[in-house]
Structure formats: C-alpha cells, structure tokens
Amino acid sequence: MNYEDIITIEPGKRSGKPCIRGMRMTVTDVLEYLASGMSHEEILADFPDLTEEDIRACLAFAAERERRLASIPA
Image (tube, rainbow, N blue to C red; front, side):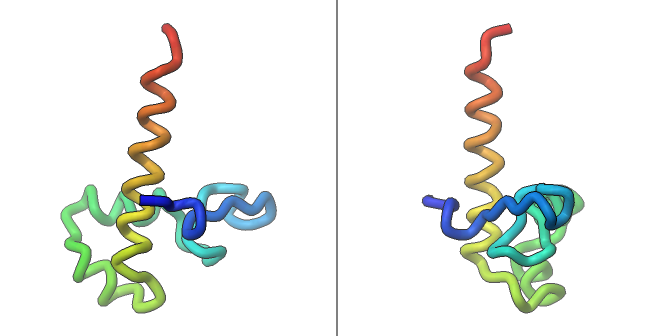
C-alpha cells in the first residue's frame, strides 16, 4: 500500500508526528487503539472522519518504519 498520500507530517501539527490526511489524528493514536483491542469497525465508529484505508495506511507506515529500523547496523 502507498501510504504517502494519506500519512502527512507537518512541523506545526501534533509536534511533527505522522498524522492522517492532515488531521490531528496520529498514526500512533490508531496503532494504540488497535493494540488495545479495538477492531477497525470500532475505530471507524468512534472516529467517523477516518476510513478503512486510513487504518491500513497507518499499519503500512509502521511496517515500513520498522523495516528501516531493522536495516540499521547495530
């Protein structure tokens, strides 16, 4: 998935954390909801401005960041 059109980073918004489509919802927020056990449907019901594609973009962004960290020599 190409998350680059969905995940935005703006220095003046949420301290430069990766956000969803310029909103104040961060990738971390979504990942924490998922980690706490919320389903995609529950997240979408609680935050109607989000889409299923937004949630998948957060997961893709996190996976890419993890891949980059894993490739850094120790």
